[in-house]
Length: 301
View (spheres, one colour):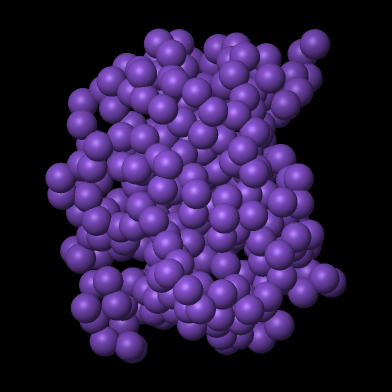
């Protein structure tokens, strides 16, 4: 059903600073900006977000996978990697080593928390992690031009688009059921994995592992499912507002009427960018995450 990641929505306390960080340091460009009106806020079941300023950013490659920044006050009790829900955004880059050096060479708004290193399971893939201006965790990853056995994607600009989003929740079985049974994705069996940034955030030893599974959206996009233990708690959220941090991920999907879905917001036509007159609806996933589906094509037409 899902075919691509369309947008990652990030909540920031200082919109100008966050916008400048992604534009100046990652070469993103502004494609839309404005103030959320009542219809936009209601489309996310977030009426309290009406009147908030936002900006929509596109990578230098021109890929139609966007980063949407929405200004909102900080939410007490929220901590990146210590709450359930969407927790990190993985972005394709051509050279993580050079990008890490760039971050370290000046007063960068991105702080390297994981040095560039090859993945143990796929040494041709090099990844590093950095915390951004709003406390968000970004992975910056090089996939070789030929791709890997599981993923056929590589950066078309020095810093390109999101290709993996990472979800953390207390029940791996529930997360797998949602993305496999409700949304129709192929999901791998969970396997124990060491995640350095979680070990650091949770204050556990380097041998600690979590269960990790992969939901395949396409050859170009994946969802990583991380099983969180008692070190993480439900994400605090003000009533009627967007969740703090990485608030929502928007996916393109074919035929929103193909099967009954547990809609939080039923599909409606959205004319603001990047919807361009397409229908979009919102679900709440098994870890409390917001999942927006944007229709690409209806087979009943």
